[in-house]
Image 1 (cartoon, rainbow, N blue to C red):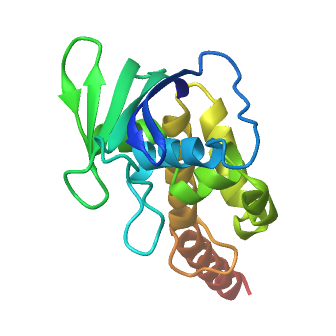
Image 2 (image 1 turned 180 degrees about the vertical axis):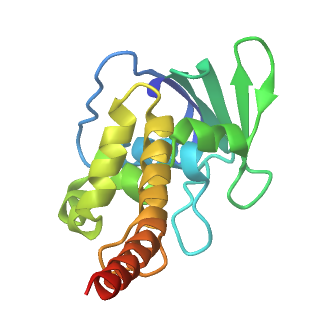
Image 3 (image 1 turned 30 degrees about the horizontal axis):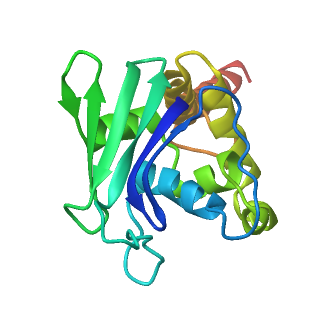
Length: 199
């Protein structure tokens, strides 16, 4: 997934703002310029508005809360992800180029298993996030980066999990129940019986 454009209807001090992200975009500026607000906006559209006890960035001038992000995906092509405050975390609507719409299930598919924590630590980080990257396991980061960079990435990750599960069902070095372990035990018993008959 590649973000192409932000449509901020109202989020903190930002209202009616469009931002083109079609090339590599680095946000920089003075304190209070809106960098953290834009970062929080992207996170809110993808994962839901902040809930109680967190800064919600509701519009300062009382405008329409929420916005949208246009993204380009391998599986669905270009989509617009819109989140509006119909529930506490907001209700998401996915707009396809052919006019069809979808919801959370499509968004989950687009994100291919990425959660808010991984997004903050790997794809959108600030100084605080950089200091906390150690909280993510090396395997979590590696698996997601492998998944995100590969063609048919989610399918590869799911296949890897499936193969590992099947492998565990067939053999475990110290196991007794897996298929190969059971066969090895039976073979050992037969060898012992053969030695008895020969002996």
